[in-house]
Length: 227
Image 1 (cartoon, rainbow, N blue to C red):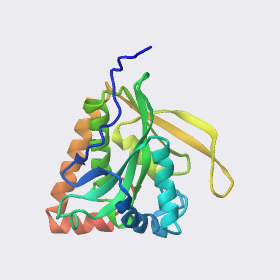
Image 2 (cartoon, helix red, strand yellow):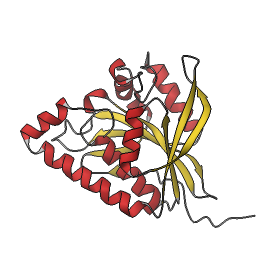
Image 3 (cartoon, rainbow, N blue to C red):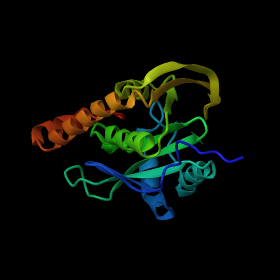
Image 4 (cartoon, rainbow, N blue to C red):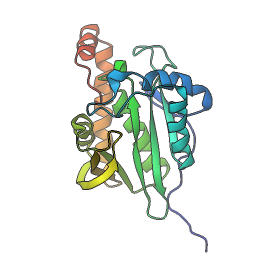
């Protein structure tokens, strides 16, 4: 039996913003991405990943595992010279758990290098992926989640405009053997217009700050992992 789905999988095209571009990951991106994901200061202690990647093979295995689950995996690159050398790889993000029948997916697997925190990069990454998901692909629900101990990510998700749904207890075994409770949030298609405006305003603020040297220095000094 055939289905006429109202939504479709991500197109595989690059998503272009004012600060960053999101490009479907390819093998040649792995060394640059590993250099970002091997930084201990960006891992553990409630940060996005539990531990830094020890070598290139670990980064490759992580990416290949996501691709094997039919995730749309993007590499995040700088696109604006005011933020650094254009083309510089600063992190990764993914769209996963795609259910075309029920028009839902999961936005996650986001990791941004420590030196790029507090610059508006995560905000525009979410703006680009959510816009593609709702406006181009026609999904109706996006799930975003975080470890209950990751207060930074949870705060950032709330600031996106995502709605708290609940806590999945004893959900995932952490690397240290303890069990993670997962806090689940969502953004629905009817929420998107308001969320979009809020994200656009925050990107505009980030662009304005970097154009003002004193504010740019202050922003860097106050860098946080998710903005």
